[in-house]
Image (tube, rainbow, N blue to C red; front, side, top):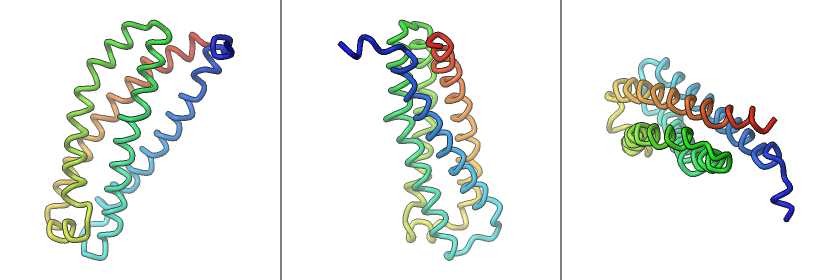
Length: 156
């Protein structure tokens, strides 16, 4: 009964917090990747930073798939926003293709042994990852803008 009495703002206010935390994760991930890219000559002593970036990458990607996108989809359904559900259906496959590349990067550099064995290829792998992630961020920003921001206005 109480659930039915909640306003949309109360119901979806937590989504805003989830998105804020996720965007903060994104910022930290970007900073980490840029730091590694700008480091120049990478040596085995850089391995912990690279492994930390891999962990951030997997955490960010996972949060998107298992928290943020689900919340945005629930919100769109709650608001009976068919166009938002359609947009989500169009963008998720594109986002998922970037997920595969992020996971491949992680698998390539996630351990000390993997990282040290492929240290010479890291700048090229990192550049490719950053391009793919920039594309992913655009898709995600579109989802946030089209799904959450539109519903925020309706609930206000």
